[in-house]
Image 1 (cartoon, helix red, strand yellow):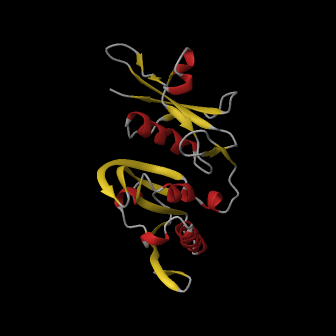
Image 2 (cartoon, one colour):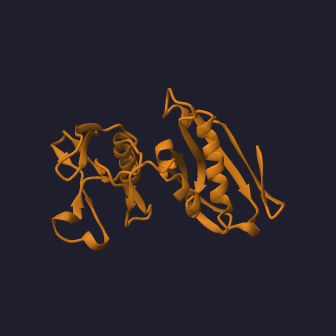
Image 3 (cartoon, helix red, strand yellow):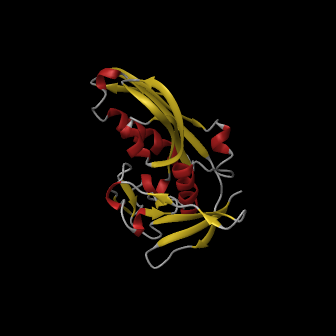
Length: 219
């Protein structure tokens, strides 16, 4: 456990510990998992102290040999923490008020060494997460289908600039985060876009556009 100091005054604390949440340990078996937590005084918010503290705590976890480092139950308005750790593995509804803003969702976030060390291929993303992988596969599409009472395939209607024409209708899917494994990307997009927690099977690891295609059968 560490004290966070600013101009010689204690303004918060933080710690690194072995992962102790079953929802995380069961999802990533056989790996060394750590979690970082911190608290920061309200009057020093916005000075990047929290970002620096998260990076120091995460670096310590990787230096001691942990494979993945998590921050858990991060409020959706906490954009700094979400950008530092980058990869979202779970988002659950949390209709409450935390800190300065209402919280609609809380997130479990994970950082991989490749991303943290600056060796992952990254480019800007126009979406709310702001970054995506710039090396193929760039993302995954998931074909969701059922056989009865007849063959049916699920498609979603997009909003915004692509709301007209053939491209307005697509299967669930989205861009891969830097250092994110493509199978995790497919499962994450399936959860985020239609709320299914399933493991889709790979159809092709990458098409001519550099996207992977997965499929999952549902009842």
